Amino acid sequence: MSFARKVWKLLVAVKDGLVLLFMLMFFGALYALLSMRPAPHEVREGALLVKLDGVVVEEPQAVDPLALIASRGVPTREHRARDVIRAIDGAVKDEKIKAVVLDLDYFLGGGQVTLTEIGEALDRVRAARKPVLVHAIAYTADSMQLAAHGSEVWLDPMGGAMIAGPGGRATFYGGLAERLGVKVHVFKAGLYKSAVEPYTLTKFSDPAKQDLAGLFDAMWTTWQDDVGKARPKAQVARMANDPVAAITATNGDPARAALALGLVDKLGTREAFAARVRQIVGKDDDAPDDPAAFAATSYEVWGKANKPGSDGKAIGIITIAGNIVDGDAGPGTAGGDRIADLLDEALSKDLAALVIRVDSPGGTVTGAERIRQAILRHKEKGIPIIASMGNLAASGGYWVTTPATTVFADPSTVTGSIGVFLVVPTFEETLAKVGVTQDDLSTTPLAGQPDIIGGFSPEMEAVLQAQTLNVYDQFLSIAGKARNKNREQMLQLAEGRVWAGGPARQAGLVDRFGGLDDALAFAAAQAKLKDGDWHADYLEAKPTAFQEFVQGMTSNDEADAPVTLAQFATARRNAMLGATLEDLARMMGTASIEARCLVCPPPARLLRNEADFPGWLAAFRALTTR
Image (cartoon, rainbow, N blue to C red; front, side, top):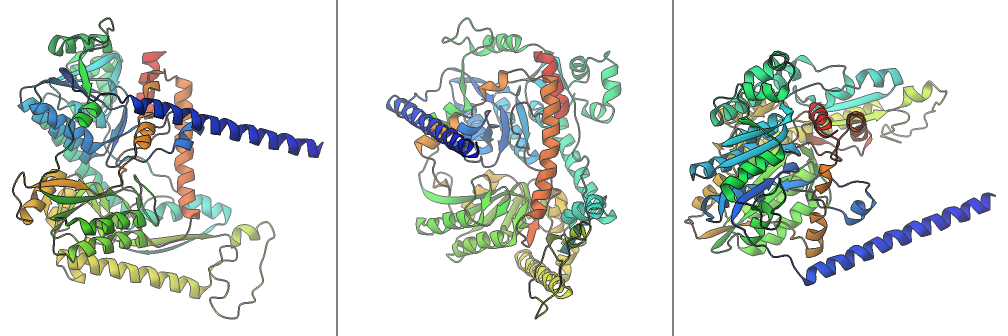
């Protein structure tokens, strides 16, 4: 029977392999067929449709075809922020575009800086006397930040708007480690370097809590200022500070509460919204009987039909997005070797300037230094080096900006966190509880070290702490030289303290407010180039036609499937377990000294599937579609 089972397992494995091979052949043939008759990228007269079904990110992750085939669902779609902004800006002068339609029905969020930049692009459309119409099933803080820039904001009658500021609850494992007998060795430099606290404490230390509270207060103030300026009649403070009173005032109807507080202009279904859009842009000739259709061109098609210019000298842009790691990871993750290789390949391009675009909470020190050294090789050529901070440029994300002579940031950029740490667990006490012990036969103090089973020797701990302090000294020296400050001055700004962009500018950690376009224009001026004499050259691996095809398969048309309350409960459970497992995996992973801000808010929460919405949004969607 044992032999038969083994044979059966072998046959099943062969069957699975053949199925996978067949699917690859099928999609390859489908790709070849589509390649023979490429879809035209033609801008139609009507609206520019910006359907943000997923998250907006600085740099989308590459889609693995094998993972896509093996997956049971469609991965969350990632929209590149610069593509969205370029299309919206293009609508200003495109005579075929009569309006911009922002579809936020399945929008999952983006970083605060990213959304600010998209909002500014929408303002430019309205300044050109073109309407911006917005529809959503439910509004979060992220979607409300975008919707505030619309000329007409619609909400599904079965939806609502629930506004929450930044922050929340953090999970701590110090009590669990103590109960299990796990000894967590922490080596850090920086009073406010709170990245290690979840592994050793049961709550934040007072300095760390004070530091983070100041950060979140600054971000929340900036958000309210942005929304208040764009939509003065929106009473966001009332909804955010007392949501119970706001909703009970309308007998528990969150949609009418949003209307009463001026967060939206009209309540209406997708069909009613489409009818309103048709009044402005006309009907869709390809679907004249579809009540939810109207004449439109998607922002993706607009971008493909309007390629950016390449006249004049090139100003290079290197994108450092996601966690910084060693190796070739990415895009979407900042693999040190991959980014350094891209920079080195560009040394022969005769760039007029280089702009460092950062949206990263940091990561390994070795990965960050690998990138910094590659940037310095461009600086040695005498060209201007300018940094542009996105949502995050903290810790290792700040490290990679130090070669720049001028640093741009947004008031809500999260930066600083100049400090380093190393976390290594050992299990001598855990194993002792079940009778596992060790006997020492060391010939030297570091023999057999580091030993996660038997524990660290005092000498091993002293060596690791000394290395951590040495890396911190290097960080202080590199940042101090870049900011023209001595060690004592840098210590006032460092120690792991996290800064919002506004206070960071006052403290001298950044130089100017502005986005990527501002940084590019400044770089051109530093290179003595006039408008029209230069173009942006993004230093990135160009996707093949097949990769673009696979990427297009992630368009989340399945998002129209209903989300039930049972699915919501499962998604919430999976999200909580996933976050916990990620924390534990980070602690149990390969030990390395890191310059990372673990408590910084992520630029966008990458969700596994369409069911994994923020809690209240999933509830609204379930009520809307059941």
